[in-house]
Image 1 (cartoon, rainbow, N blue to C red):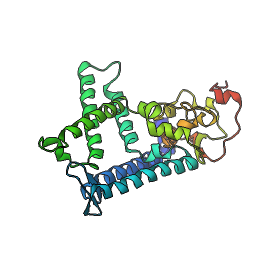
Image 2 (cartoon, helix red, strand yellow):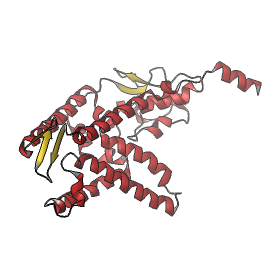
Image 3 (tube, one colour):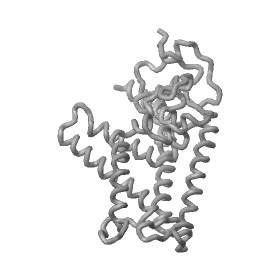
Image 4 (cartoon, rainbow, N blue to C red):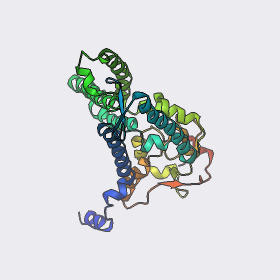
Length: 292
């Protein structure tokens, strides 16, 4: 008992910030993006209302045609932004900005608790319903940019039928995204595929520090369990593959945070780190073989 107390005293526990730095920063950025998506149309800084054939730019009512211009410019800026981010450090947009990615990530965590092989029927049905509510709210966030959401309740509006048709059609895709969680980002997301096929460069990448090897992990594997993209962060930077290699990495830093959570609490140096140049590794490391 005294030995355990002495060990605890000799091993001060790390602060929450020290072990969750990237998680906290990413969530703050995601929340700011979501708030911007809500505030801009609600306060009519930029909004199109197809249901009433009008638009606003900086609180000034303008024809719909004029209101479309900021949307077109925003889409162009978005495409260029993603390419620039890709050129600098890979799928940063996916890991730090994309609201869909954030919703899918949160939903993925919920899925692990509510929808698995040991879940009860009630738990699984609850997950279906929660997924539907999340999908509806997420879709309403974007429809609010192009119409007055009250149109969905006014049968006399000429756009009533068209809006419901568009909403329900989009809901099929969004519900699928929400229901499967982060697997959407790994396999189906058009933006993710777009980033994989456009030129990319990873100035900063995560891997094991040069002085460590796979055997130093033991049976931990927490970084793999917590990677949103289901990668092996220890060696994925050495793999040239759309689904298992660095092309799939969203540069989130979760593996670095996770490694610190495990290692620092045991008074051990974290294995995972950020590098600009990859340390030389033997083929066994790249293939995932653990040296005895």
